[in-house]
Image (cartoon, rainbow, N blue to C red; front, side):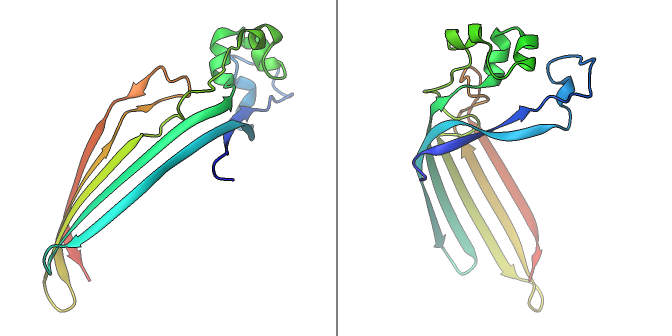
Length: 171
């Protein structure tokens, strides 16, 4: 069911052979597992248009909209900032005092690293060179709206514009 997405999370599986752990993740090196961590809702659309302006010039336009919401998600990383990390790292899930406070609950927030809007513009110009070879000039302008860096939705990466250009030969 694509309307009720699962959320995967890498979690530490503590190793018994490391006794002098220095920090909450020292006993977890090379020992991560992927677990289902909650539920999310994602909907959106993408539209792409290509237009042959001339025999040699092709223009493109693409737009994407993504609306995300974490429906049910407790993030252990958020909880570890508010709880005693030793109890957190060596327990089975959230310690009772943290769970009672709702620490780490990211439900209702947006998904991390997903821009709501994206825009792509392109212009590709080609001309014959020799034989079946042709030279080209390609330009791409890409935009992404702000996106949160974590499920806490406290810090974000602002709008980003990126221009790419290339010149070359192809057959």
